[in-house]
Image (cartoon, rainbow, N blue to C red):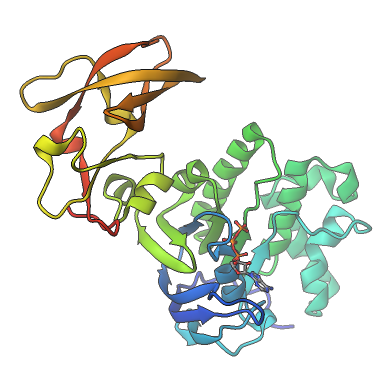
Amino acid sequence: VAGETAAPTPSAVRVSAATKRFDRSETAALDDVHLTVPAGSITVLLGPSGCGKTTLLRCITGLETLTSGRIEIGGTDVTDVAAEDRGVAMVFQNYALYPNKTVLGNIEFPLRMRRVDRVARRERALRAAELMRLGELLDRKPSELSGGQRQRVGIGRALVRDPAVLVMDEPFSNLDAALRDTMRTELVTLQRRLGMTVVFVTHDQVEALALADQLVVMRAGRIEQAGPPEEVYRTPATTFVATFLDGMNIFAAEGPFESCSMPGAATVGCRPDHLRVGTGDAADIDLRGQVLMTELRGRDRLVHLDIGGQRARMRVPADNRPSGEIALHVRRSDLHYFTADGMRRS
Ligand code: ATP
């Protein structure tokens, strides 16, 4: 088909008032979701199991239809457009490769389905394979590949159509930690090089922070907060986001932080990194804690504490081994305040 060889133009995705109800489910899988995915950047959907990440992804691709709401891709309303006509390619967690086809056969398959002629098909499949560093493995079957190589075939197969948008559903979660790291770096490099629009689903906060240009935290079918990852980390909008990202400690405001609480705040939050051992200076808040146990986490040690009857976690360098009853302090400027319904107060 002529036109199939056109260079990809990354497109923005816009989701408006999207609601999805499955037949036999009482709660909405998506509940009035509004989201803009800027063209040429990586948006990561992060949240606990069942919060609607995959459903939102499948609605963007067209594998699911919305109960109500609207989806635009590149400024065009695609709400009622079939999946294959949306210019969206998907990469799956389980790779979903054809076991009887070779690497090259898998990668060129989407073009075969679209009746791209043999020569153009071969050329584009080879280019995608080259891009994914699969040039030496073209004749292998999926069973003869490592997990990382399989996932590179999955990505190559998605890229071969020059999609306007690439969506990825936990694509690296079947890989071991070291390989996952490598694949993330490769994805960012590729995305920057091609300027693709990527929507990436994960429930792994480390992966989300590492990849995202825009981080979207979801909870129970809704978007809890969206923004640059630094901003979401530094100023979580709710206690849910604060605890989901790196486990902020949340204390009742009338507890150990009573002296510094803020009117209207029901809870006070503090990151494990911001609790410090020893007595602080005049501007700090001094606390006492009982060490319950410590866990080695590589370079750091995570210390589980009881502070005035409340559980808390503190991160210290691995060679610190606090024990027993200890003095602690925290800077006022490192505290976060939330209302009784968990909304940020400042
Ligand atoms: P996970 O991280 O576990 O993959 P998720 O955030 O991707 O979770 P979804 O798969 O989008 O969550 O599911 C959201 C909600 O919709 C869940 O409550 C789920 O049970 C429900 N759901 C998903 N697919 C269907 C379906 N085909 N029929 C009925 N309910 C569904």
